[in-house]
Length: 159
Image (cartoon, rainbow, N blue to C red; front, side):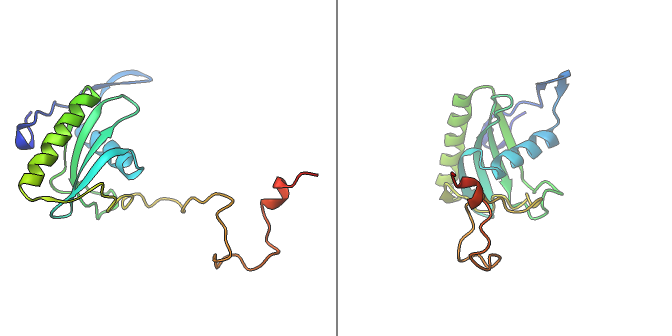
């Protein structure tokens, strides 16, 4: 299967899981790539014109490299944004070369808005509260009313 710019994209492949081999659908791969990208796992990411993005991602679960292009997800994961494409590579080097080639072609076409973009990251991940460590509270926090709230400090004191 050939994708944009003549870069070959294989059909869905077999993946190893705890129960043997199973075929991973295109939707499952796309969902996984969004999850990895939103959690900051993209090694490189660029914003393209038209609220589109291109990322270089290595899946730590299977070691495969991906070039992932998509539009801004405004449905919080309910729908795959129009124009979403990915290219899967058996090695990281191949994925890096393809990413550089595609980004260069986008740059020549005038489609690159920003490299190392974090625009739109995490937009589709809305479950749960913001994670903060126990030392993140400060005097500027409106939820902390005074010095009598010293949670965490008691466990740090040595007697």
